[in-house]
Length: 81
Image (tube, rainbow, N blue to C red; front, side, top):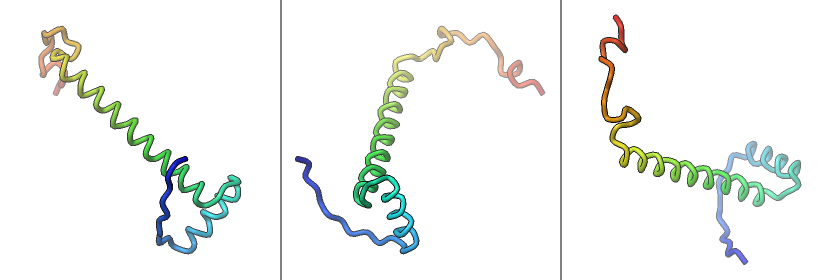
């Protein structure tokens, strides 16, 4: 069983009223709605952080960034004025 802890939130009354309506429409409680939203938020953050770490690791191991170690163009040819 997952251990739970109660928290106290201060939420504007109009937002609380609307959130209760959303929870009812989704056939869940306000707590259930908050758990679902917070779970989604945390999972997205964890996935972003993992993707960022993979990307940074790829950058660290590949110095040529797809150039094969040689640059075949000049800045002037890329940025014509």
